[in-house]
Amino acid sequence: MKSVRVIVVEPKNPGNLGAIARLMKNFGLDDLVAVNTHRIPSEDLFRSMKGSEILAGCKMVDSLSEAAEGLEYIVGTSGVKSDSPKEVLRNYFSPKEFAKVSEKMNGKVGIVLGREDIGLTNAELSMCDFFVHIPADERYPILNVSSAAAILFYELFGSRKSSRGETISRADADRLIEKFREGLVNSNYPKHRIDKTTLMFRRIISRAVLSPYEYRIMMGSIGCSRGKDSSE
Image (cartoon, rainbow, N blue to C red):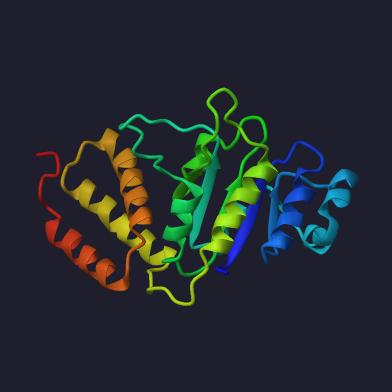
């Protein structure tokens, strides 16, 4: 299975972190990080079962940015989905769709599970390259965080393949995005739109999962287009 880090942000309900550790054991995962929690309740230890060693090795950090160190891709999860065509900054995959996309990825992938009550903040969501939404009945669409984890892990585990194409690193993607931003600045693109447009470009690049060849073509084409007025 691809290299995955499971990040649980501010777990509030005792038992959920332990249940996630147990699920990780079921699906061959062992890298668990908890954000802004500094103790493991006894209920979590009880529910972790055979995943107790994973729970014991859980790394505790103070922020999502710290938890994401060393990752190539960050995947946010949400129980709420907007169908508005204007929601371009947060395009959602189903777990099955994301499992297929993830087969093209190289490097470590972080799956971020949000708070049981409010999920992830806008600042945390802005750090994510992908978003996964699990559809459920609209009368009660929010799943328990450990239930959501089970569905995601199952789809990722079931999508294993023996080979996949080479993809660019997160550092390469950052260079491409920075070059795109520089192009906006140099072309007198409206200043108030630069941040949002750059973030939109990041989402598009993340979903595309570029190959090294595609990366070189895009870097060259963005370089050639600099100096033109993008607002035309």
